[in-house]
Image (cartoon, rainbow, N blue to C red; front, side, top):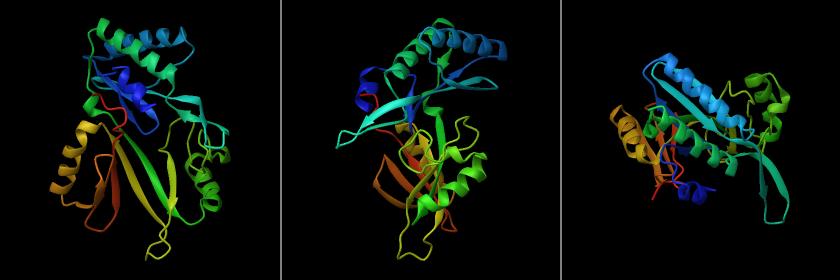
Length: 230
């Protein structure tokens, strides 16, 4: 889908993790509310809407489809949350609405945080984290073919499970995944290093850059370069 997103020319939007994200700047609450109302009407026309949050001077939008279909190498169909054509079409319409209302986009400021847990048995520990994070056992595997924990209401970050290093001294460890726009990666990594962080692994940069703090706690700066504008 990355190539389709890039071809669509969605300059206001950035693909972070599973969704399309945009931030529009507004002078006041009334302007923000008027824009969100217009976005709602635009979504009504196709039966699809973004997730919206508002704050002083900005409106954040996230587009994702709950019924994306993926076919694996064996021809099996998996339904999960991802960007689909309806998200691309609505993003294009929202960009038009923002321009009509005089709102400027700030794509470099979008970000998205998720959690990662390294474990040797995700199937065993996932129910505990589903209950702890969301209070709902159905959050395990929601919108994902894996054991990943996703809160359908977006109250808490997604929790991914990775393979634990069996030979390591800490076979189970948490890390934070911070998704940013591709053009922000270098600046974000430099800021972390200037603050005392250490680059542990940049072999997959700018897609993935692993940063550790002085105590060895790790965070990963992530960027989806597949959909970057050419």
